[in-house]
Image (cartoon, rainbow, N blue to C red):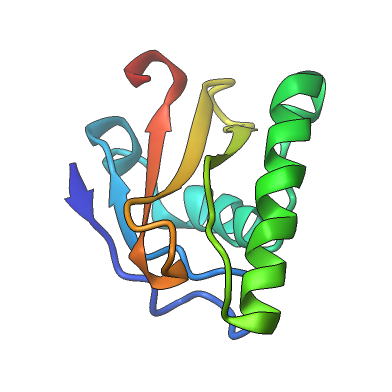
Length: 119
């Protein structure tokens, strides 16, 4: 896995992705393919996860906690955020997963971008 720069991210994400890790399958892609997915993920657009109601419910619960913590700087972020996107050129699907290793700090996130077969 490789750590990637987040310099190209907009100033308006709803949460900090923390350290962004990409797997070898994602490294093989041009950044212009996966960077828009990361931008969508950071604003609460979970991509194709909408096809899985239990994942949408979990994302919504965690996302609302993230927003509440941003507003109050108080609380914990249990769980993870999961998005799924498909590369239109190849038809391959990819996950973006954000997890907090210190639930009391929004800055303690790790976001991993990987192909579904690397999960």
